[in-house]
Length: 320
Image (cartoon, rainbow, N blue to C red; front, side, top):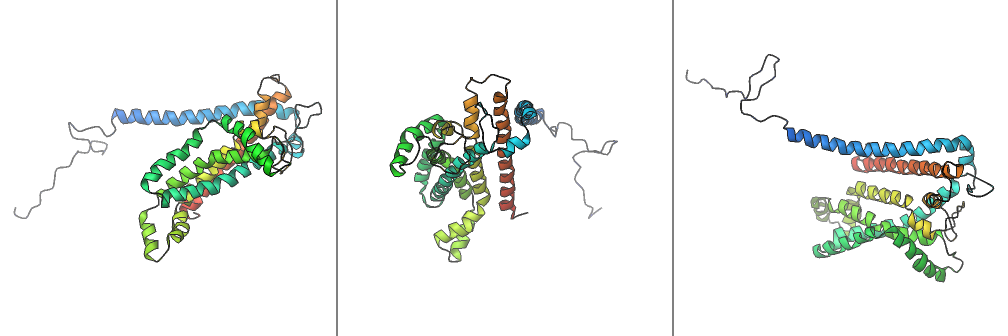
């Protein structure tokens, strides 16, 4: 009949269960290769989870033995840490204070210099200069930390002693400064990537409204990239908290509850190195202290990671 409309033939006919069958000769919806890739990706994720659980299990197993002999009141209430002395004290606060003191100095160095370097590379540097300077800056991250440690002890400390005559040979200041130089590439590289990812249309809109270049950077580009910048800073702080060799060599390994950067201090990681040298018998209370300190360090880094996720989510979604 004229005017009748012929409908196209469906790709598949429903079977008894109501689902459409693919045409003969058609490809499977999920090829075997995709299943293999999915299994490999799941296995990779499972390996990381199992590794974390294994580390946590080892720490907790030995830490439980420690806390059977040392109460939580002594661990968090005492202000001295002398488990290797004849008169033993197990207050963790001197190690925490030394860790946060060196980390604060490192952060005070890395954040402004790293962020300014990122702004220059993203907003001012020509393309050729960016391709040269960014890899050159990232080379700092590849220098072994033990080299940084001896550099802090042999070069930076004598220079600082010329400025501060009362500075001790081992001190938190030189260790923190060199540690800050070490984590500058982490802040600058990740922040530069975040700034570079901001759409050019946002910059052009600001320029079209009469905004100057610096005004555009600080009122448009930086807020738009804030989630990546905050993530890079917190990642760098977590890296500084877990740094071992610089503080073990240059800070002095003398736990004391102080905020004075000119005196020797001990950090959680440097104490673990000190006890792990092999002189402490396995199974003793002195040996188990490294696992108690390790659990504390694990908890601090976990808190840092949780905070980083909350900050990133807040800045990315406007507090939602």
